[in-house]
Length: 180
Length: 170
Image (cartoon, rainbow over the protein chains, first blue to last red):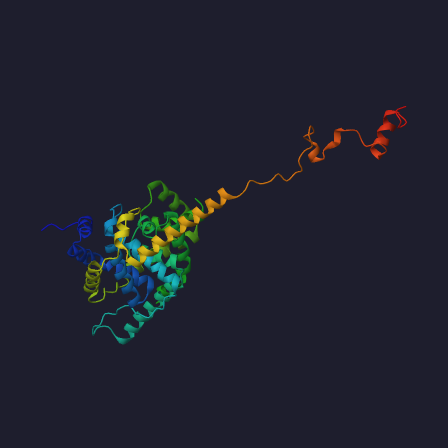
């Protein structure tokens, strides 16, 4: 059975096909969640934002035009929601990244991983929202500069400037991580 | 290539996204610039960090929650109207809203009519200057600068002096 493209699924969503919408969610939930979590640092906030992003896509389905790849379109909505949320309040890093639970990992090693994750989280939170989003999209989601610019609804040059400033701020973090 | 420009291109450089020409220029600069080489190393470290940091799993039941919310939204659609579709908007809004819209329209029309009526009924403005005397259209403006100065006035005496007369025409 051939896999339907994102554009075909969105056309079906436009016609009221909820199963097509479900397929869209299952296919791209990791992307939405990943961006929101990395940016906000809070599980509940990230879940809210990611869910809201999909619901906005559903609401706007009749106006959807595949001018960009669907992941870029989704990234743009998640980015917008994250930046709006960041402007309203400072994110409180309440989560820790998951640590592999197996008998081979000692308590000391688990603590080291937790400390490392905390350090990364705190460094990210120190960045202004726009720089943080550029870092998340570029380095954690692996988008190229053009896709980052599209998701952030800005220019490639602006993204390059954001990343350059973010790199300067994150340099001490990387030096510290390298020493471990 | 200057440092400012190279720093902007560093990410694209380490990800091999630059054209051959620009890449070559960046590499030439990096050979001689410690600062920019450090920036390139930082960019590489960030890429590795992003790739190796574990991605948190999507919360359990995420998709099911979104689906449930979607079903609710579809069951209770938010009225949306295309621009300028007045008839569709009129059909969709509630009765109180229709009454309010009609009231605003009527009040606006009445206000416009009242202002227009007041303008039509207002008398023509009276001329503010005095009526000019018969035969002298400028007299009403007291601009009698071209006429003779009154007899015995300072201006009359001055004119007599200039013209060599003794004030009595001699």
